[in-house]
Length: 264
Image 1 (cartoon, rainbow, N blue to C red):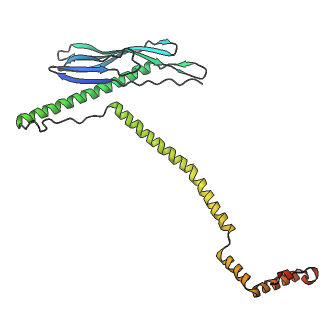
Image 2 (image 1 turned 45 degrees about the vertical axis):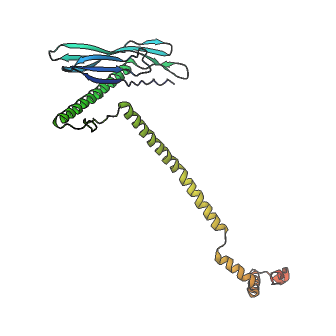
Image 3 (image 1 turned 60 degrees about the horizontal axis):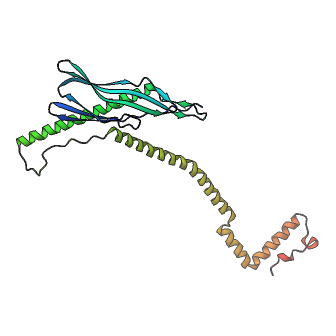
């Protein structure tokens, strides 16, 4: 049986801060697989026409025993107002990934194309969040300054509007994973109850019926008690027995003694 291909997750961190006429972009791979992990800050002009991410590499794998090494780069491509392009490297990644082994010891490595895809998707989403967060802060700051100029307030009062904090991608994934686990536990409980409750119900019904069958009804108990306390009832029962035997061709006086049936 072939071993399942190992998975790969990438969750980098990107933050953007304003500094005069420039932006400071801070990048950290935040990956335990990155042997060259290092936080890096690049300075880019605020007045840009276009900003895009460029992910290169991750196509030449170096396999050493149970490890696969993949190298690549993440960069920002900036196009200014004059149409001039400039490349700013955010990270030079060296990812050391462990293989999965099957029962026979055969190794299965993660595919380089999957690594490149996951890195590109993660950094694009992270940059989108960082830009959104930066512009929200800028709008809140501008609104706060305008309100301060229009109507000064005491320093102890709130002067600036605060942008609502946006949950990170990691927090959203953890929340989704927790919700999925709760739903899975609920399904397992419902399945267990579906298998367990019907047999228990059948056993309970059978036990109740057995108890009812083995116990005399109040009417039967009353009749038996009445017969034990009434000699005439016993005599009538003896006479009925004699008549029954005679109708069967038997003579209780000749073949046997049923005097034990008479009341003592």
